[in-house]
Image (cartoon, helix red, strand yellow):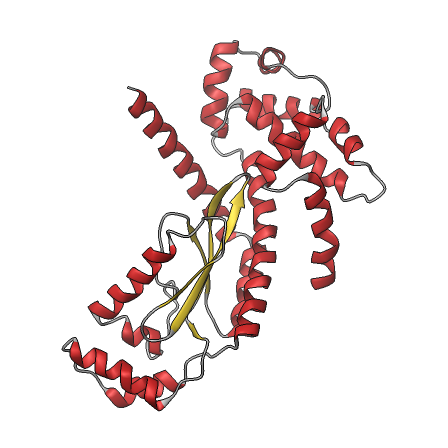
Length: 310
């Protein structure tokens, strides 16, 4: 029974994450960034779930590209998947970069929702070293050893057309993706708080009451009374509507309010905490770090840097 409950919670969490990811991928901010990134870098960009690697072209591939041609060979695909599997063993909080046998590299930058990884921003394949005749010869030897026959001239043309970035430029690209991932993390938390799909009128009243009175001491019983339903039924409906319990939801609402207040450099962190409804700095710091993934101080310090880079 315990295992079934745990699996049920895990499935609910995964379903909630997938819904937020769908909203993010359809958001205007992601579409605008994807378009600008693709134009500037000549690479595709995708946002995907945390539990799987996927081809980086995402249905937009150039069928004549070096990576696309190699992907037609089963063992070449297997080599890529092995590299991705090895990378998946790295600490989840880090940007993951894999390089497979043909010298193609791709990376995935984590996007957070609160204190857990929601998914990854994933790039297309690039070369970090200039293509050479010698390297291409070693690739064709390996493919021939695997028993493949190909249009070697076409493969060679595609190889020498591959996108090449210096290590410094690749690191700069990943830094830009990390900054964008922070923006998406902020948006993902707002989506969790603001999601109202399929809510009943009672749940809408409860949300409105919480928004209006978030700075006051709020109990589950008080909100249930405002929604005009029993405590027990409120708990059940609220969890179904929001995907989280009342305390967690209230914390997220208050943290979102505090983030807005923290943008004012003249406001103290303690003032933002108490104005948002937190009763102690300990609770505020703990909730902020859990939901945002950074301390209030780190969150505030990141914004001047982002504005300078924008």
